[in-house]
Image (cartoon, rainbow, N blue to C red; front, side, top):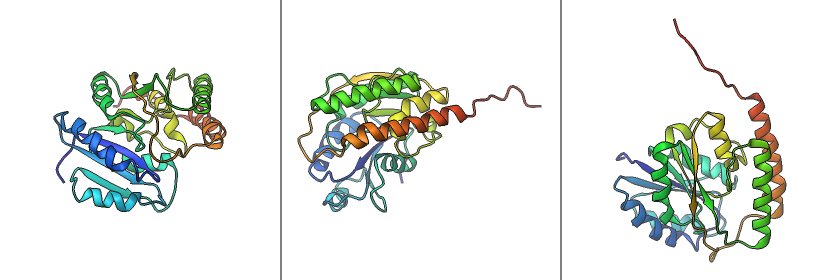
Length: 238
């Protein structure tokens, strides 16, 4: 395989309607950034035609890589698989449902020059009132515990230095805590305002259970991780 500089990772779960448009939108953006790149789509046990469609798209798009998980394991698992498989020096995460705007990718990458992670901030959410309310509440409560001071950790559009991201431990639900986990390892993070598109294809995978209650359980898990985190430096070696 030829070396790549940018790896774009997107988890896929029943997104057959949006996949062709995702490739159509991403390809000119990444091709215009001047360095070799790859798009990694991780199928998280889709029950529609997503996987067969991705395999068909791969025959015409050599930059595309497909990972197939052995069942439905959730967004963090699908993201983790893509991140571990990524070959680029810069890793970009994005949703496959087209609510993230690929045109924002260059802005995040530019800011990455002075940071270890850049987080997208959806300043104009295009969701219904319940999703906006639950997201704001979750972000407010998460900040009380993590103190990461990030406005919108739920935005999947993020850019990372690969060497830094790959040393971050990932467990179920931990994709919501990327900024806090980066800070825990003394990394530098920044936020960039990004566009947010209304969902026009497929259906949302989120419910009150996985948006609020599971997020609370994940927050308890993170609090335990921070409490038990090893945070030392070797001063000298003789």
